[in-house]
Image (cartoon, rainbow, N blue to C red; front, side, top):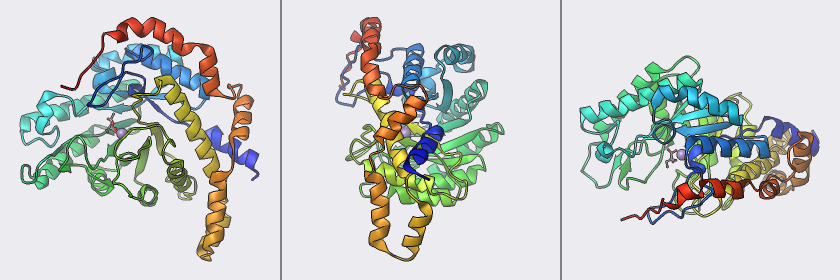
Length: 392
Ligand code: LRH
Ligand code: MN
């Protein structure tokens, strides 16, 4: 297939889910720099997601975090359906909040207190009901549980409590639903996290049942860890449910895709695109970033556009030719074939694809030209200005 057709075919199927929390004012523990144009409510998060989809044609769903976006529970479904219709984006994954409640100081589903474990499980089961009410397929579970000091918690008992909760959630799933289990090696706990790596998430998913899969957040790995190898394994085991894409230099920095290591994302997309088993068919692509310094809309549009470009480059790899060189151990020619695809400038063809879809050829330039952010700042500024937050 020639470059044009490769890129067009790749972009025709490429879709990336945006996180509602990427549009709101967020910060680090050292502070939050308020943006006047940031979304202050669910309607504005849907409006922003709608605008990102209008500009890129590749972001038709928005991930919701239950306590941040659906605080009213199932009864909010009608209002969310109204917002979906008004802004032309559907609810994507439903993300429970198992980390902000005071009760969760020593854990949520793995807390030594049976009462607190029951409370956390209640929230997870309600998240499944919210997803069912909204027709959302994925319940994306990240629990921040763990400990900060050796000897202070039983990691073995916490495994059993975590397994028990996951089994209950799986039991409540509708036939078309999935539970995605996200792992993270550290933060907010710094001695152990109950779901600390892909192996722990994988065994929890296996134990929970066939509708449980593993979610790979690219920011949740140790320095130097080969993330695309984790992806290859999870595809091989047909246990890869989805991604939270972002970039990082050090830890879970939640920086924008490709800003630090674009070749990393290319290598991950290659594992997805070279999968011949069909296991990659239902892998959800989602963004999980917090835009503390960049303009929120600019960062989100830039992220989707960058992901489109890197995905299109990975789609250029001739898998048959590469496999031949790999199996002949023709290292240099295999690497050259692989690298050249990464270095191929697909941007002119990506612009052509956008024009062929009556989309703005340069979504970032169109965002700037549209005045969307300035209008948002005017309307939302007064509600944002009062929001100064300090760490201590
Ligand atoms: C945890 C995480 C998780 C979300 C949160 C916003 O670091 O990646 O996926 O709940 O970020
Ligand atoms: Mn994440």
